[in-house]
Length: 106
Image 1 (cartoon, rainbow, N blue to C red):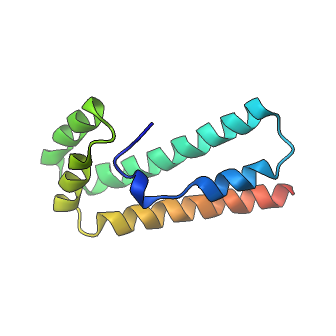
Image 2 (image 1 turned 90 degrees about the vertical axis):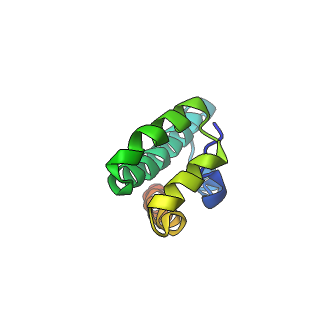
């Protein structure tokens, strides 16, 4: 799924780490799905906590209509200072945690 914050994150390196594990294709795909879902939840958590309450409904409606709409980033950027840096930092931390866990299994 294309989402409004895709340009801020790079989860590809984590997928490469998953390739190092001895997993079946369905298990690897499930792990990727779970990692993608975790990233999505982190971003949503950040936005729902920091976005002023009066703008949350508009955000949710825009996201529901088209998750990849760049207008969404415009909205959140207008109301959350340094939101792009915050998203990058939270996702980077999450990816690092996943990477560390994968490397423990190797």
